[in-house]
Amino acid sequence: MSKRIVVLISGSGSNLQAIMDAVDAGQISGQIEAVLSNKADAYGLERARRSDIPALVLNHKDFESRELFDLAMIEKIDQYKPDLIVLAGFMRILSAHFVRHYRGRMINIHPSLLPKYKGLHTHQRAIDAGDLEHGCTVHFVTEELDGGPLAVQGKVSIDPDDSAESLQGKIHKIEHKIYPLAVEWICSERLKWTPDGIILDNKPLALQGYQFHQE
Ligand code: GAR
Figure 1 (cartoon, protein in one colour):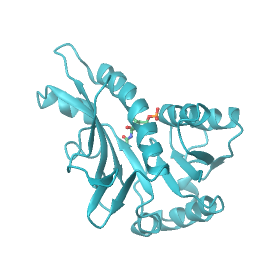
Figure 2 (tube, helix red, strand yellow):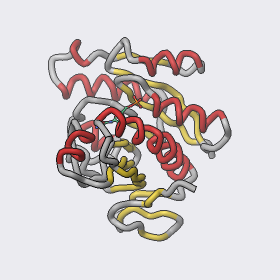
Figure 3 (cartoon, rainbow, N blue to C red):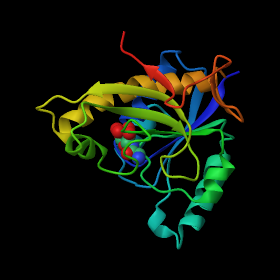
Figure 4 (cartoon, protein in one colour):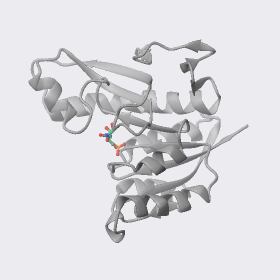
């Protein structure tokens, strides 16, 4: 059965676009029911409107606390009865209540090879550490920031002339492949977070998640 997806964004929404394109191409057994942004000028909202997807804005600055903002988000999101919440560049820390409410059905994409480089400025941190490889990770969301179990990971090489900007470009290309893939695997119930860990096609995944390789 087709799953109901709500996507949360704060910015450009290129990952949202990749997922929208995969839905349009029939590659995902689900529909994006709504896109919610905490920023009214997020370009991703425009992408949603162009595809006739409800584009919702809730400005965190209008709320007295993180908890109240998150409660208002839950109220809006749950109108769409989502099976899956997709964080696609949603740059807000989530309250424990919000995370628990969507436990097991909320995923995030983070621009590093988690558990390395949680938080911000991941590309520069990978360069400064002299790493030879970098990447991005889709993970289920828990109360620990960027700390939930890993689902899919994609790698890129760091070349001597790479800058944070060039790495970001390389990472985006991989993100646009692994995020639609992870969304489809969850929608088709091939990928699940169970008490025994992350399962893909009835087999437990290694802690780093499924390792994506370009064909
Ligand atoms: C993506 O690169 C994603 O990994 C990152 O924000 C970017 C959003 O780009 N997310 C985080 O840093 C979350 N900690 P997009 O708006 O073009 O999809």
